[in-house]
Image 1 (cartoon, rainbow, N blue to C red):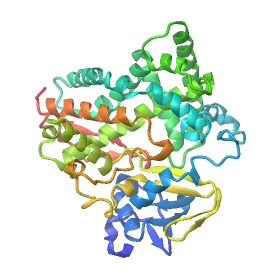
Image 2 (tube, one colour):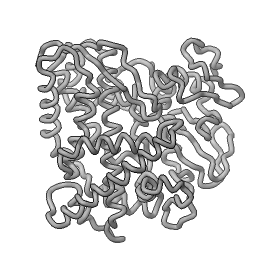
Image 3 (cartoon, rainbow, N blue to C red):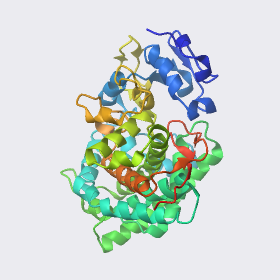
Image 4 (cartoon, helix red, strand yellow):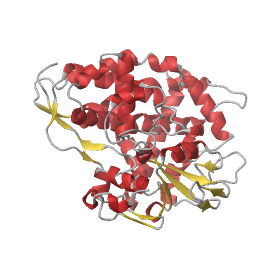
Length: 429
């Protein structure tokens, strides 16, 4: 086993220390959120497990353990004694009442049997054929956004491409008017800010207000779709039925908030991070999208190499012993480091090298970027399709574009995404 001292100290954040199984690392330190991978490498080299006070849990970096714990039913997303698997948010502050009213019905904050029922209903609505039918629209929206670059020399691809594309796609899929996209973006940004480190009371109040407005907007949409059903996800979810019944209105609103937020936020980061990765690590990105299997492998490697989500938390539902002998009591948390697991040298040869061909070979481990187990990302097929088609069009029409300035990541760490991605266009369109 290599000790952390073997990792060049200049590559590690100043706050990093790892001694006797205790990790000290400030997630808000710029040296970390701009490039977390040296810290991950040091943690992996020391065994991939450590107590991390800053996240109030046990950091797990090893690919095999992250993969196993995502599926281990001795762990859950919430700690609850409710027989229906629902969280109890009654003790949350009053100024976050609207936010937690939505969260209390969210798939991400539920456990079986309620999670099982809702997941089945949503899964029947978000079927592969419905997603595949979106392909022509994804291409058309991508081309329309690229058309908007005409006559410009430099463009911020986050603002002009990666951000507007997913919200338009998910809004269209769900059945929300495109004119509402600016509001959807604003609500989504303010709500997701709740999950960033060191959030302020102002951030909390803004998130609560956004949640209240978002829920009110969606209730109006639901009422309209009940009167005039259409070929969209809202109408399908209204009609969805299982042996246990339908989604009630609170569940329906919460599910739509989750789909809109997750369908936008993570995909923006995915497209931005993937574009940066391709520009920095390939000579001719457009060639990677010449064949479907090649393109799919390239997308999987971008997801492994620099994923949009780096942390997924779970709680021990009973006493559990981890691989290193660490015993967890009921209620203790594990911080599953998805970005670290994707760079584990025991899972991937040359993990810090971008090699799309690895996902063309049999036996390559699945990356952890979409989670796993019962909380595996339900929007993964759409995210993959959007990224593949959007990047195909972008590099087909501007194959020679170059980075203008060093890309910088947002101070949000586990939602790992870029603030800006400024490129110089090549004149091709």
